[in-house]
Image (cartoon, rainbow, N blue to C red):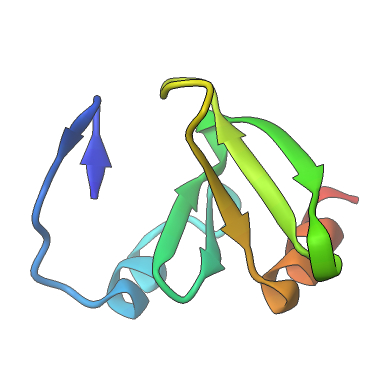
Amino acid sequence: ARFRSRRLTIRRSLRELERMMEPQRFFRANRSILVNLDLVREIHPWFGGRFVIRFSQFESSEQIEVSRRQAKLLSDMLD
């Protein structure tokens, strides 16, 4: 996990964390990443029906890919 530019070790599964978070603010981007939507700067279409997310608080080169399945859910959320 990242918190204010620091990495933290959390002893819970991502599924457990996802259940604890507010669904309007946190989104499961893929099998290994949970995203705080408040920190998203840009969302761009990517290859194969995926998206790429860039964040406002991290280096401009840092980005993550949203899986195809989750890209559909994200698109529905943002509409």
